[in-house]
Image 1 (cartoon, rainbow, N blue to C red):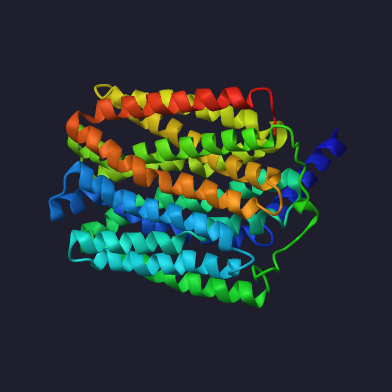
Image 2: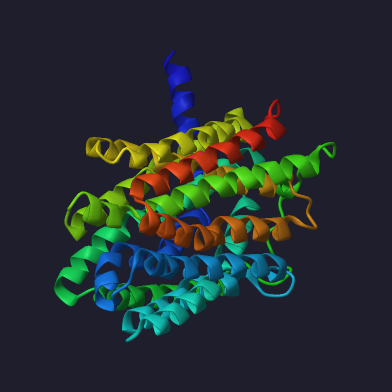
Length: 407
């Protein structure tokens, strides 16, 4: 019995060393830095709304333009990355470049200039995910891809969780412009350092990506296209609908519940807090039990959970609903990535990843203004009810195309 216990401990230690060696810690930090500038605006949108005199449609557009340009840039980067542009350059620009124009967002004197800065910020950020995720996954065995990409997701989750708290704290002393300036400076420095480090280690160069046995993939040609489209659609829909809904939480808390702006930011952070454990655990479970069952579970649950936001009178439900929404979204992220990386053909893997990131990151750019318009025309409750119902219908249709498959 004691020997068996020692073997288990040894396996855990070995697995931990493998997960936290090499590129994983570096890219957890890179992922954190990459998402900080783009997430600041959501935390201070009530102040921006008041400063520029915006309605819900315009504030939704302000949130949406970054996501739309970010998604479009992912599509282009997925095609160019590796063969045409060195992945390490795309990764570094996705960190430092985003921060530079995040600084310009905070310094913008007009609404129009802020829109332009956000569009450019999104364009520069699009190369990070199509470059970082494959680079990481190709350095580990197939059976650990989900875990590694789940660990990588922690960086983005930490940014989403901590940025609202940091932003409102800084804004208390320096107005809403302060967080854009204060948080941009270390991010720019880290992006430059990251590029120099990857170049020194000869990682992420054009046509020099790490190629290990894990690169070999097993593809069942029969129904391959149908399954890939259905799975990518599911993963995209969960992320777009949940993320877009969560983005309006600060306004919901301030305008409907009469809470302080700091309370709105805290609830926003709570939704993303779930990702600190949902991503790694979701990736681990998908490695053991299959990507399809995990994705079907979270996608079918996400729509009804969003619908619960429409029950506005039951304010005590909000923390539980937000944690559940965050769990669904952050489980879907690494599972979607590892499914594409493990099932796409070698000659079109980057392109499919680019399409996936384009849709999942750019989709909120379309949906956010629609939600804002629904709120303007009707109410928060009506908007969230329609969003939840639409997501459930999409999940139901896609589940029929994936039912009975595991990976």
